[in-house]
Length: 353
Image (cartoon, rainbow, N blue to C red):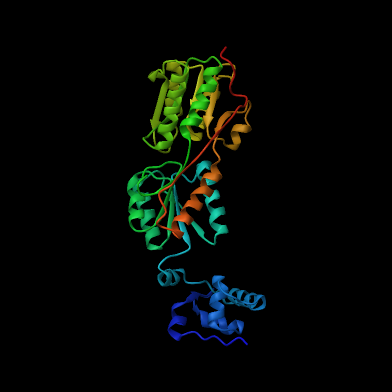
């Protein structure tokens, strides 16, 4: 025989929501509406402990009628943490980051966590503001595409499980999920060299991030493996940040006259493709092109673009897994997961004329 459960009045006053009319709705209000006890209502809403299917259905219907929304702040205070994982990415308009976030969200949802997504616009002040917000929300974990190591280390020092994704800036403080950028860039450049191109230009971003630095290194290593000099004049590094670089790219191509291009990210690939179109250059008859990262438009233009494809959503899923594992066991050793890219040969590359 199941005993009737009662809840202490003080506890009832702490666990409350806000109704659709703006009037506070307590857990006791909800329990009375559903003709059950507050403790049963609490278990049903948390999804923990036994509650019959009939009672759960009745409680959810009552919550909808009353407009009951759990008070997340009160719950966070009670448990000293929340079920919200912070995610900070550099550029919400870039499909790469959107797909990473999609992978993170899918993994977190399966484990009963929610994602709160913030774009920092490659601004370290906004990155720090996002970190402070997640600390205030008592988020147990944060996944970040870091701009500086400062924020990752600040969060880790406060006991937050931090995972850096796409690039690693704080190896001593945080877990990381990164791509094998060196291998991807090496494969792309080696492909162009194998087609007989000897003036292979590189267009990338001027940062010390492991992603950008790794792609530059792979480009150089491919030349070394082929016993060919890597001409510094054939490398264009544009400033990190938003904005169009088409004028700079057009001037660079006019000055250097490469026969092939390796482009270090999808945004620069978009700019470069537009410059080539405006110049009247034909791919691959006049110039060959390989881009790092694969976006839908690259398989829709004519000719299609040869790319180093990143398993982007897998990056996000693995980052979420590491974050949840770190939350469950903060004593785990620091881990770095390195994921291999894939060179997809399409129509934008051909032997040198």
